[in-house]
Image 1 (cartoon, each protein chain N blue to C red):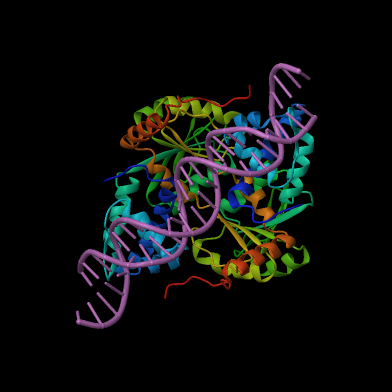
Image 2: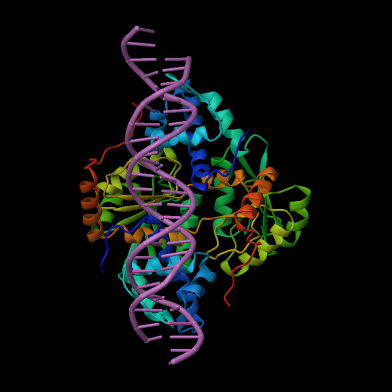
Length: 231
Length: 231
DNA sequence: TAGATTGTTAATCGATTAACAATC
DNA sequence: TAGATTGTTAATCGATTAACAATC
């Protein structure tokens, strides 16, 4: 797997391709072109070809990509070929919903334990997944070689929790707490701050903005509000 | 408010600045430098100054930014100065959690109604917010001039729901459904696909990757894993 | 062979970083 | 005045887009 410094943007698009391939395979589609992947993903065909080319030549000129083969390749690139197990820290509303959501929607990653500070929650189950006391997280992480954790604790508690899990081997974090987390340089954090997402949307929702946006787009080349669909 | 084509990346950073300012004001801090904002946000001081300068000259040379004044300015820029009301479509696990989460964590945006297809959920309350039948969404959106909606329905239902809400005036969408939504060019979509976030993290969690990442960073100038804190 | 579509190199675009004059 | 920090312009970097030769 050749692999220099692939950018974050490329890596974030890979799971999108994977999802589309899963759908195509379910529909028994054999081959797919970058143009068709573009229609389904919203990314340009050139970008898709370039993204894939970072990792190898997976397509057939004149024909496109074999869906099953490309899917396998992407799974290997991301690292989803081994069983991936993760934990959720925080069994509040969000932690509970994320745990449930993941178990139905994510075929590649399993939440195998939830941790919480609140002793009243400990021992309860979320979709068959047990809630453990937060103190047991270090041992659990080490024994189960957990590398990825989902942080769904209040902002004030997040840094301490993260320091702990990182100390015991976690290398990547999906952070829902509204704080900047400080981590060693070999640990990756993806922030999924819902408040910030929602607030920045407001900017685009006002009437004046619409006009300006439309104007900008029209000047740029007048792409009429086209929709992307598989042709 | 001068305002050409400010990039999405800039707009996404504004709520981060806002959150930090809120914290500083709560701590009765009067002035803040771009360097201090950098420490709290993780963005560079240059970038912060540049971001703010797109909208005006809010600082004082030699002294920094007045927290209260800058907060007010950012609120105006984003459009959070008017009361912002939004709706959640989908009262499943995720929709429910998002509704609850927002009411405690987001001081600037209110979820005022939830909609669901399932008649067994209709009439129930989530933190004092009522669940309505999805058919009532069009009327509700128009009467309450809703411009922003949060989509938390299954992938298969998302496009239809979005078509409907957009037809009745929604201009910005926070989409949790794992599908590419097709919308007119004057409507904005932020995708918050948790599955994709989590999957792309896996790439960064493997042992080989760590080595490469470390290597890359060391070559680039050996920033030791420093932590950012307010000095 | 003709048509289609990849893989890759070159050109463009945009965003970040660096530098520094302005000025409190 | 000296020190600090902004606002802004210029330089750099990186990512996207365009173009096209390779080839099925």
